[in-house]
Image (cartoon, rainbow over all chains, first blue to last red; front, top):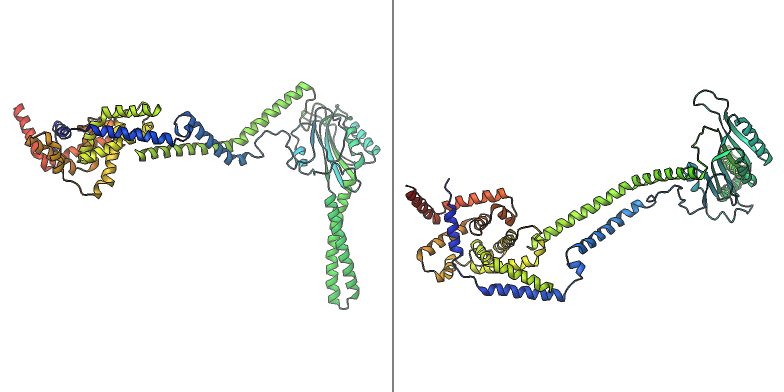
Length: 369
Length: 182
């Protein structure tokens, strides 16, 4: 293949290119134009951190990107961003108190919710949403309908389950209540088997707090959870519905007395049946509510020492501290896992913005050059 | 103070690279005035965007990149929209100090052959055989891969050898080489 000789080509190009003089004025023109540009730039100088490349601008860009990413991802963190051992109530409702060791707090207003022992009790979380604000001061009023219930886990000495059940029965009777139900597995033998019992105690609302305090002295309390809720609105609503339905029923009875044809009587009878059914349904709910607000239910779980249906919670200071530390570690780890998703999203967003910015900057410079 | 330092930088660039840049641009554009315009613009742009020269990068290919881009821009936007002055006039203007007729003839042939090359081939030929850039530096200057540069150079030399204006010169050179070796 014929190709032009490199030497020939080089000589020819050198010859052509070097055959004219370069004007000195041209470089002076370029320099004066550059100086004029410097002067213009000075007069319209933007803040240094915007113009000067380097760390300052990089920090500024990074800060803006972090703010943008933070603003986008913040809603993702909201409500689950911090470790929470106690499931803080969202309704800003009644206070939740955790008392180490024996429960010794005086039961005050009906809305107080108290947890002893393990802070991870499921009852804690579920009862919080049922608690209502504004009940505390009104709890003393007799017109209010307050329902209270709770559960206590007790550890009793080996072979003392039945005796403890008897003691509980006596306590309830003394408080004017009764034993609603009892399930017991006593005298179990063999490896891994142990005796336990669950009993539900019902006492009048006014003595519920007393019963809770008394029950704790029967055995070693490993967990305690109580919940009170104001059901006045629900109660009033049910009563109003029943009253309205009864008024309708009375009117239908009047219509019935005036009916002459069989078809009219049947039609009115059908309506009366429906009304009666609804009234009975609401009345049933009202009765249940009445009972719940009259009696407080306390579920007591008894376990022999050495065995536990729940976790045995340490009572001494150091042991409790260790337990809290482990629980805190687990909660922190859970929190880390929970935020890893939004954090990954935020990181990806930052990376995408950074790459886009970098490409954009390079493309801009290439265009300008 | 900072501004004057930067202008001093530009002064250094001009002293070092301006003449060769103008001659390179001339070979690409085929017109001395256009070349001076392009290089003036290129130096000001390069100075303005001097931050884009990353540390450790070579200055020479970077500057040539700016010059080549400016020349390409001129060829795309300005020169096609106005009457091109004839290369003969241009060369007559150029060779005022050189009255060797054969040299003028050869230069005319070279310029004619260069102008008949596509711009992308012309640029690599000029950068390689006049500016004396390596293939790697040309790759940086035109923003293409080194393999592309190599193939363009090959194609350009093949076309130039076939160009009527340079064919006689090529054959004359090859004959004289044969005589020397014979």
